[in-house]
Image 1 (cartoon, rainbow, N blue to C red):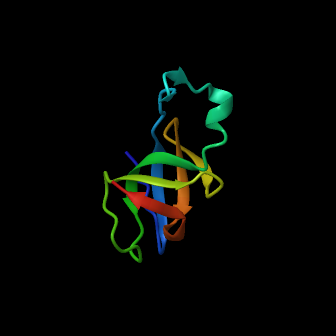
Image 2: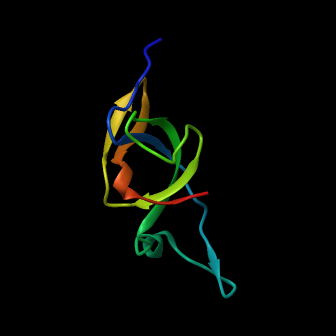
Length: 88
């Protein structure tokens, strides 16, 4: 089995699909979810130059950041350290 590793300040993440949110008793539709700027993800691998993040951390990152990569029939995303906004 091949292993995928990030280098330098790159981070490999797996998106976490969030269920529709309730606001004031109303469910926010998927089309309104697009207005949310940040996405939630699980860290799969951290490059050697990244500080303050570890494998399996849950993060929020800028939804316009990075690009997708298909690896062993799974879609992952590669982002830069600077695109991480919050670590939970």
